[in-house]
Image (spheres, helix red, strand yellow):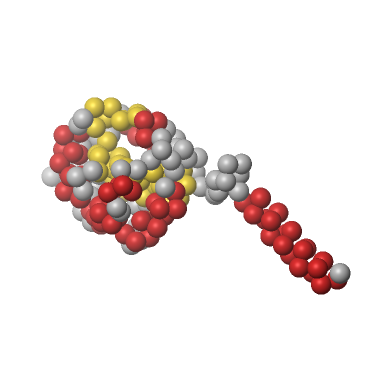
Length: 192
């Protein structure tokens, strides 16, 4: 009888732990350390983009700008490689967005050309400075426009993470710059 108790107690504790981790419906509980995230309606070259229209899909959201000399191209290249690594069926359930934090220079037409360089299914979006600031804050992203140089050029320092939004529209993960395409794919597949 004592042997059975020693087996049942750890089993019971494991089941309680599992129940605490899972919410009703079998979905993993959201990590409380993540920012809240938010729905958005921003502009693309093909018209308004409402994140609520992408329920059922996993979203990869990156805040950057097209004149970024190095980190944006690196992060967007990884995103494009991750999309290529997904099967066509999986790719239909994933959408990659680049939110421009430089609406002064990044027109929607320019963003469409820029993002197409990294992947034909990536969409560049932007909005008013207030819309972008509000969305970035909700995701925990930061950016600041640096003073212009003598030639008028300027940089925008910004967070270099990719935000992963689950199929229910909730922020599920934040991937730092330097992750591999395989890590992005693995993260996405857990949410599909």
